[in-house]
Length: 150
Image (cartoon, rainbow, N blue to C red; front, side, top):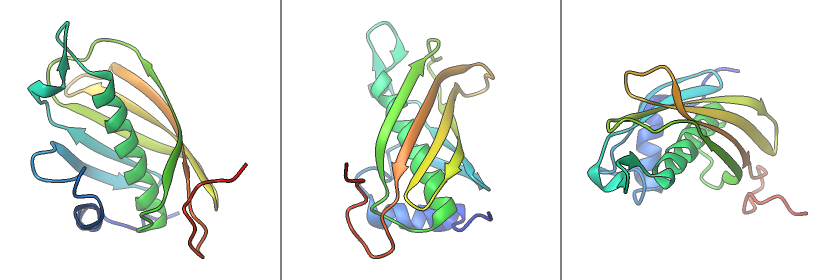
């Protein structure tokens, strides 16, 4: 399955549809997209440091969710109503006080659900600081809110 949206197309889409998240000063950057995957970066920001000198868990969760959204959009195109239905994170080690880099890989991409994993590392290190699994709901072509009904 080829990439449907390039980095530039994703950036334009996110600036237009989600300026509250993807904006100048957020520190988020899309570095690369490939078939069923992507690499994104969260620039180090002092406001993300929690007591004890580590980068906060919510910062890492937000980065993982952003990475999955980018991977899903790169694979299916501009679908603003694709939404997270599950995100599970395992914090593995204390991240260094520098940029975080997340790589997402879609494990399964169906018509209604996309499941993937995200590995987060401190910039320049190979050992992950967090490992995430996540599932996204993809709305039907006819619209809807993207939420799977029980």
